[in-house]
Length: 553
Image 1 (cartoon, helix red, strand yellow):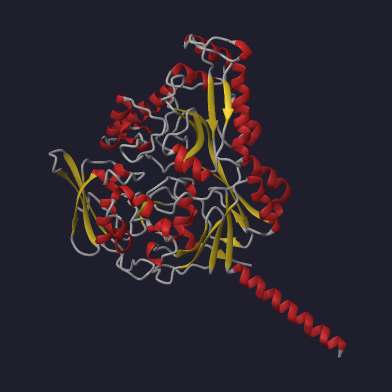
Image 2 (spheres, helix red, strand yellow):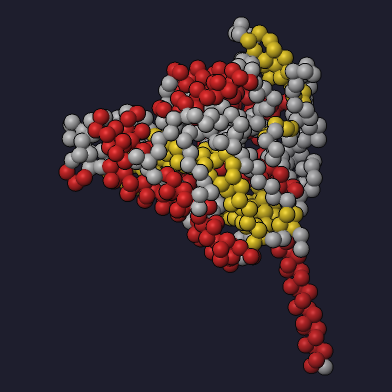
């Protein structure tokens, strides 16, 4: 009898273990290093928000894994050859463009409300209103009018012609039936949006998953959207946990508290290489090079940094190759400009600023910064050359790079004060409202052939007057750069277009509105039982295809 009881107990334990394992495979816990400052798709450009929202929303068009524009929410891309895109004279009497789109007829919001052209019109109204302060207000202002043909079909009338006319990836649909009620005061809309005040409202979401729970600063829980019209997602629950200290990310992975570390917002290359040496046999580890530009945004309102000689000196004073070789095993090549060599528009002959402390010292002398007491340079007024250097707190790799920069610039006589903030504050307030006084270290993630208008055009400088819209956080204003950015969209002949790209990259590397550091590679650390995660290598995250993810034994 005792043997029978022991046998039955053992069988029960096996059944319970199998049941627990099966249950665990229905749930995926992802670790990322930042918590989004908002879930609203048009405020605060943060990768953490994009990573999460991509599971609960669908863009009208997107750049796919093959770096090609494709439809997600639309039926077909507009095409000049088919007549669904047409050149026209705009209402302003200028060369314009009309593009036709049709929304997927099966598409509905998470509460069952159909997605219609009413949502398209409302999104345009919000995006272009001068008091709203959306990140990509330029896109919405370019749309002069919208013709509504029925509940699904519409035509956008653009104020200019464009070589890349097919995609409207950053036209982020908003639910009219929920958000219109809080848009009666546009200047206050950002504070009243349901994406922050009621983020678990199903009507805000329309992807394979919907946001089911938010624990501020800690985690966001997603569950399958019962009104999703596409392929059924596999997991019954996905939890995205924020662990801002990247060292703690690995500890949580090894303890089983999280299942994977997102490549888009996880470990840096140096940490991943160390992790792989010790624990690589337990996980899938995928390295993906991509269009990720790590740099230092320079606040050009700072009198010292407004002098291009000082910016060039700072860049020549950094041994970026040594940083890449010693910290990242050479897997993150030195950047000489904002355009990645992986992009087919990259220009190899741009000016370069290799490590040259003597040349850097000469530039600082020319700019009027002489050696002073305590090894810190001073100008004619006796003011020290002191700069604040900021980044996201808890990112050990960035903090280590900061220390190297601080040490190397100290050798030049530049006094650097390191001051970091949590990502949601750093991006949500300090960077987006240009509150940093010196240098801000972060990464831009772009799509192929992406014209950097929003980060370099003078119209894109965030100010209180324009409700802090735009991403030209440096305050860079160059008439030539503005003209180049405008022409890049209009001049489509291959040779002429490439010539514009070449000049734009040359001007950037000369003026240095930002100091290039290196091009990053992402590391995806996943359990061996997870399949279907496909890194893209550009700004649109793997979670845009989360319904393809599966657990397999």
